[in-house]
Image 1: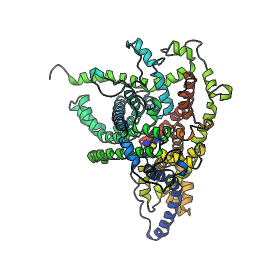
Image 2: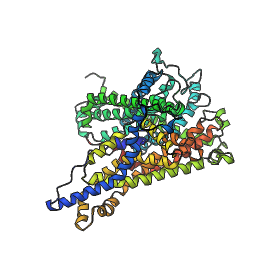
Image 3: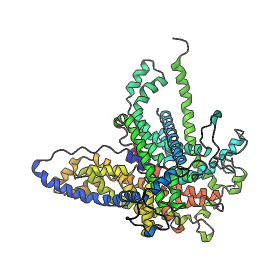
Image 4: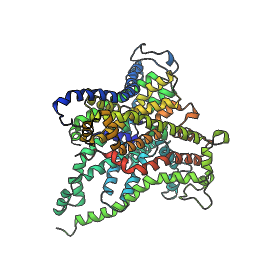
Length: 338
Length: 291
């Protein structure tokens, strides 16, 4: 969830298994102590339950109600829980032009963004594996893209990539000999590296790079932590047996990391799939970067069509649930290990 | 064995690649922030004339951008001083309120057996995989209907609801590490549960509570989507993030002035991050080591 903030996501993700029940207390004391505990437990948890229920659970349920009604920003004040329910929003949304495109864009963005972030995170973790002077500071610097405010990060990226006075185009022209400045964030021309047409616009490519840049520290943190737990003796033994660095990586380190990478893939995929901020701030959803979350926002605010926005958001959540379900079905086992 | 020694070749290649990789990674991580700082000091004309400059020329440093961005619109500025105040109100309010509900909550989930304890955790966790945009719709509608959209208080309540569950997870993990025996000793000395919590476990959990507070502050300070949905029509209530994003679209405000705004938005976060980095990074990965 975007609001949870990147770091918040990490904390949730890494939630430890429920604590083991505490040791048995003497039998006599148990009865009154246990009921005291129960009462205290309800008392202490209730403020959180109330606020989360009122501000998260109920609103989600209400989204269902909104999605089946014709609610617009204009007639908002007259709409109640009881209204004319119909599937119209869903049929409109699913058949409207651009929805399938938005879904494809979302998929490309999430898969490529996740791959970029994890790939870069793995490279960073490997490069910083052996200790050296100042490694702690370098590691901390690696986390900056992740903790920096998203609005500042997107703003500085769009300035750097600006076709008129951006530093990237300046050096692209003077050092790399680009003929024309590249409109990284407003060009819908498909990119075609080595003549292969990927059906991916320049802008989509750029927002994927941004996602990789911004999220790799998350993968880096996880992978580094897991790497530290690999027993040194394994690699030492392999070295003695004559294994080269790549052999040690592919046969010892990588297999140990795979469960962690599998979990990371799920988490990053979910958050990238739901991501709104980055694309909205970088391109506003223009030039082939309109993902479903941005489209929902567009329906909600610019068109004032709350019902359609709600229906699309639910479709988004449903597709995500199905994709994650499929993934867990195939890789669920490795996740248990992690 | 041939004279071609794969092991030696690989070692040499990776030995050379490693420092190179580290330098490149550092560059991509740090350069955008350096560029932000650099542009905030340079006059706009100078940037347009010489976009490739990597440091300000002699005598070029201009702090006028900061004055422009901070001054109120009546004085010809962008009013960031007010945005900073709003961001602080929302962020600190979120921290205080969240801790007030999350500390008891985390304690309860960690220590006390009560019916539904596990289910509550599961619900909280599940909620975090919902798209924020889905949650945004009903909250937008709800706060519009009760006339609280556009107020900092409305935004604050939403933030507390969003971070309370995360906060409970982080704190609960810490409470789990405090041996229950310490509290049992206090109970034998006649403390009730709540007294034991207040006088024994809470002081022990202080480091975790502090890092949690910093962490909530960062989330609330950086938040964008809900600020946009709730406050966009009320300029006097804009947060720094929202103000920057809104002004970034207008042609009238020079980019260098907005870069000064970006620096103002980023500096508190980076400062907090380096102050608490050990704690935060530790908190982020706690549990990841489990095999």
